[in-house]
Amino acid sequence: MPSVTVKLYSVLFKFLLKRRLQALSEYLISPNSDPLYGVVTRPDEAIAAANPSFSDDGVATKDLHIDPLTALSLRIFLPDSAVASPTAIPKLKARVSSGNLSSRKDNGLIQGYGGYVPDKNARNCRKLPVILQFHGGGWVTGGSDTAANDLFCRRIAKLCDAIVIAVGYRLAPESRYPAAFEDGLKALNWLGKQANLAECSRSFVNGRMVSSEDGRRRQIVDGFGSSMVEPWLAAHADHSRCVVLGVSCGANIANYVTRYAIEARKHLDPVKLVAQILFYPFFIGNTPTRSEIKLANSYLYDKAMSILAWKLFLPEKEFSLDHPAANPLVPVRGEIPLKHMPPTLTVVAEHDWMRDRAIAYSEELRKANVDAPLLDYKDAVHEFATLDVLLKTPQAQACLEDISIWVKKYISLRGHEFSY
Image (cartoon, rainbow, N blue to C red; front, top):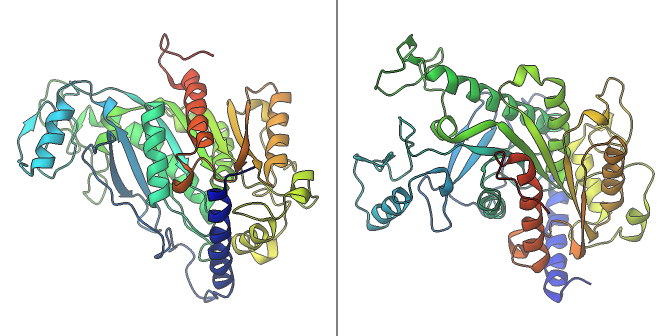
């Protein structure tokens, strides 16, 4: 059974979530409002400020807004292992902590704004795989910059030795389906665009062709004259080793984005999706499973509140628990066969009513000869490995270590893979 701390926290969590869902269900959107302009975080949620310098945990972060027509935002998590020089990181940390910041460049680091800037000659730059992450929150809460998601992504970045890009998609009910799924696709396409712009920037400076020996700072600009190349990704991202990771309802988005990536493979070059990770997916269906009946009143998210969250997310005319966004086991005409899906790791918890449908989906992938292992954690609840208050539990620590071992089979450079 879960610990007393988990039980007490679950009571408080469910009380607050119920109040929030009830308040949002009373929220009426003007029929003339534009759904493009959405909400990506709630004002009452704890937010972690971005820190572009490497902090004590060895991870630097920055926020980006990538779509001028929506609130779509990203937070990039860059581990200090991206910098090859063993002396560069300590020097940067020392200067930031002492407040002695200047515009000088040292070992590929510029301290003018107190943050990390890659060496333009890439002398100290290591290429790392990229993990595109989608947070949970039942469609109505959460964000790429919340304290809980920030802490989780930092751990993933360090354990997997990868750049994590957390997607701040639009929330319901202000932005209903398919807004969050569209934001997922926009983030993936933006990543593909960044990969191509990074290649172009090697040959262009301020929009004109230059020789590779030109020592000036390289950049490419868009039609409005603003810089388009994201320097951290241009210097450190290996787009041929990309993973999609989703938590709870974010796993539903991740699975959708993965299917799109398989269909649009050639159009996303050089981005290559090599694996996906689904943390306790927010799957549901009209026909209840055994766990949905037995654990309907389980910890944190009970089934009644989850159905209310789905009502806030799906348009009223489209509402069905067998909607393609909700139930991946319902066949959809024109959808790619499961045999084309990449290796997929699924995480489930013993005391989570959503577990059976996630297990069934994992089984379908294995029947299609996809590498689709299942990690089932005893005495665990929904969000046990991602909520900040539960990250120090034995189950959460074991889960993150297990995931890092598995995913490194697909994202490590040849000769450096983990085996088990």
